[in-house]
Image 1: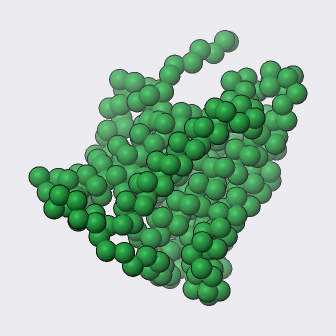
Image 2: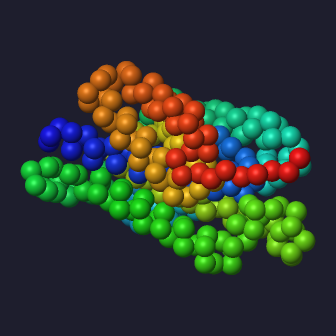
Length: 292
């Protein structure tokens, strides 16, 4: 039982990181119906920013976190304006191929600038593990889960109650009608990318605290798994991204503990296939009708 609970906690930890990245996927898809495969590489950019500011510049952790968020937002907004905006009226396959191209560009640019050797991430918190009913839970795990849950609630409140959030929902419902109602669609889409990339920056910081190694390709696998988490929970639905991330993390952790470490990815993808066979819109996604 202790082993099971430990693996469950580990799954919640990694699932929280997947969920933070998945929120960026689900927001962008909900607004412009674009699968931004470069989103995982925004995580990599944030990780390198954090390492440079902490080790080379000697900044404090809060200052490095702020710089990480700002750098991720800057890259996200520039990518949206330069690569995605000109293709909004094109076929979706064009945007998809462009997103894959941007991902490869960022990875190879990082490889050229920083080299293939991974960089160590410094230890930021020297806090003893928490003892809860005989379970040893690291403070980083508690922090990651708490931050992820809090950000999901804040994001949900932002989308439901604020003026930019209402504009996002309007553009998501009907792009053309939102234009006719006087909503600045370009600004709304830019804000969406900025918020998603800010979450990726926070996710990069938390990911590096758990897995302290930074490399040019570090964002590929977490980005892919976060996309799967968004689809699993119901892409375009904010709570669905969180639920999908937790399901992914727990399934991966339990598979490594009880079946095989080499089979963890296969089991996760198998769960995705089974869920989509019976509920194509994801666990809490809703069906939508489209006139033809």
